[in-house]
Image (cartoon, rainbow, N blue to C red; front, side, top):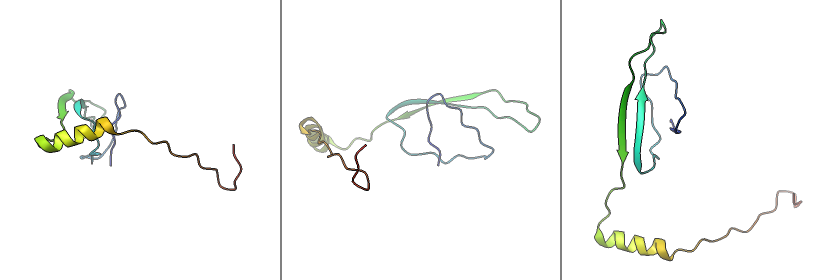
Length: 87
């Protein structure tokens, strides 16, 4: 599974890449450049992929929106390392 990181080149000898489904909502630009065994490069192929959140429906969107506004963060208590000694 491949996770894309902005600005990081992904090099592979495989003809396909299995992609992490966790791309953030927004526009992502991908560029493909192929190098043959002699070291010659193809012209880059560039494509923009737009990831959107699927619509959930009016009432469900409203309920989720209210939950997000009313949610308050909880602090997780600090756990002591194994052995009971703190650092």
